[in-house]
Length: 185
Image 1: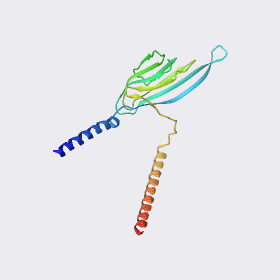
Image 2: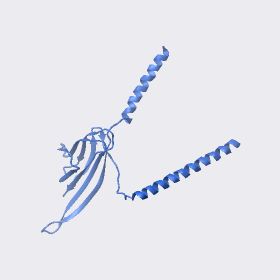
Image 3: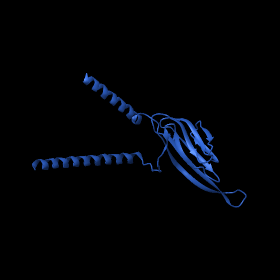
């Protein structure tokens, strides 16, 4: 009787811990974003002296999670003068009572992405934050990278595997030597 009660209690505790762990390990959406480019132009005014400023910025948003992200929102501090969304998607926009501009995508599937490009003349709208129903998006630092030819990647991969093999060989040889030294003491 006591063994059955103990087994039931352990099963209940393990079930509770397993359910709690699934909250962190199970499939969920993971929204990330990065800034591919920002730019500033001084454009000459046609037929007049002087220039006017044109500011551009873009942000790319992607769902790296296994579940679709719902209601993905990009919140800007003010409404951009002009913006475009690529690739073409259905989106909605609204303005908050505080004057912030919100662009909303209903869903963003696994590994799906989109880019919002913003154009400003006097002031460039700044991205305040990115969020979805599952929480805040995380900014990912990115940089441009040279793409090497495939043969270079293969050679580098083979050299890395060869080096790892030599490292493993010498580590095991050192452990054998250490075991012999400890065994003779």
